[in-house]
Every structure is written in C-alpha cells, then in structure tokens.
View 1 (cartoon, rainbow, N blue to C red):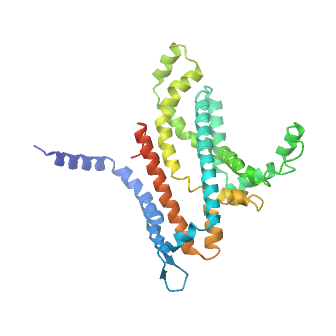
View 2: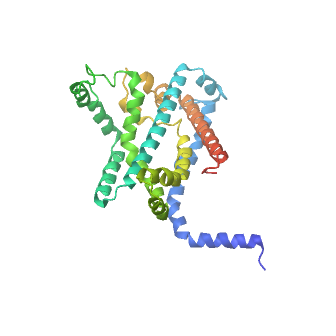
View 3: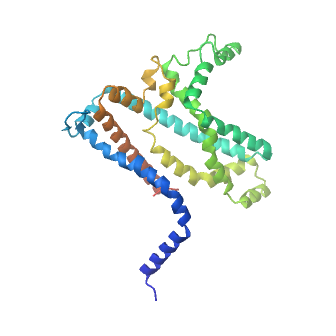
Length: 307
C-alpha cells in the first residue's frame, strides 16, 4: 500500500511527464527572466555605495535613501507618478470593461470583428507617433481647437500643452485611447466563460440587455477584474517615462515629471548612479507592499485574490 507522500511524488512526476512540452516551451522565458530580471537585482548593492566608474567603492549605507527623502523634487515626482498611475488605472479599467461589455452585445459577426481589430491597433502604435499625433491635434491651431471654436464651446483656442493643469487628464485620455482595445481582450475572454444558460434564464424572466449585463456579466467577470486590479496596483509607483517624456515641455514639467524621469535627470545625467539605484529600490519595495496590501484586502472581502 502506497503512502500519502509516495502518492504525492507519483502525482507530481505524472504531472511533469504529462506537461513536459509546456515545460520545455517555458525554458526560454525562464532563462530570460533569470538574466534580465533576477541577475540585475545584484546591482541593488550600488544603492548602498558611492559608486563612480573607475574609482574605489565607498560604502555609505542608507545615505542615498536619506538624501532621497530630503529632496523636494522627489516628492513632486512621486506625486505626479501616483496621480497619473491612479488615473490610468481606473480610467483604463472602466473603459476596457465598458468596451468589452458593449462589444459582447454586438451580434453581427463581421462588424464585431472589425471593431475589435480596429480597437487593438492603437496599442501597437509607437508612443513617438502617438505623441506626435496628439501634439498636432491639440495644438493652438490644431483641429480640436478649431472645432471647439466653431461650435462656440470656447471663445479662443486653448493651449492644452501649455497649461500644467491639463496634463494629467490629457495623458489619461491618450492612455485610454491607446490601451482600451488591448486591455479589453482579457475581459472578453472572461465573458465568454460565463454559462450561456444564465443569460437564457434571465431573458425568459424578462431581463433586458442592461439588466443581464448588470446582474450576470459584471458579477461573472468580477473575480478576473479583482485579480487584474491587484496586479496593476503594484505598478502604481511605476508609471513609466516614455509617454511623459514625449508629451512634456517646460510649461508643464511640474505636473509631467515622474520618478523615472527624475532618475534620468537627477541621477544618470548627473552621474549619481547610486542615487538612481536607491530610487529604483524604493520603487520596488513600495510596489511589493502595495500588492501585498491589495491582496490582503481582497482576501478579507472574500473576493478573488492572487495568494
């Protein structure tokens, strides 16, 4: 008679045998992960040193972290990063879910596939091109200002990229345009997994489309939404820099400078490599804490969670 431990070993061996091709296919990704994600962590040691190429290494402990929290510009970049990340998270999530819900209601197959394909395309457009397009569209003499003036919604052209108060909202709107179609894919996949008999039963009971969406579709995809939100919350402190770098100018820099741009301007460009590394460590630690807290809250609320 086999022991429980023996059964577990046999089961594990059988699972590995049955999924050997999947494991083989994952080897290149694991190698990439080790080389480009785990080995560079060794570079964190630089955050505790006064590092300059070609000079002796000097250990300074937490001096760079102390300096970090004494810099007013750091708090400005942290504020911008957090605000833009939150705006992108919630506007992007709501737009993607809404788009997936309405796209799911389209019954004409050719039109549905066409809309899906068109909605995916902006995701693959380079930020260089996207920034160029919207800079032209929102220019003082651009088509948006001309249309607004023609419709008498404004009396004179508005300098959209000349007023810092507009930057966060413009950036969020561009992100929605660029990523909604792509982000909706996973929600469409979740919707396709809902039992069709639930819709049929609701239809028999007289529920319309919006009631079916509200009482069946949204609860059905809620676990997926929660898991994606938990993962995305970990990126609240990592809003990137490419879009801000391409859209910013000196008039809006106060609201456009994020942590990654701060690292480039006040770390790398000034040869403060250790200082830049300290900011990277700070971002990683905060990201881990945010994911753990979000996951704990999801578990306490008895909804989907990651671990």
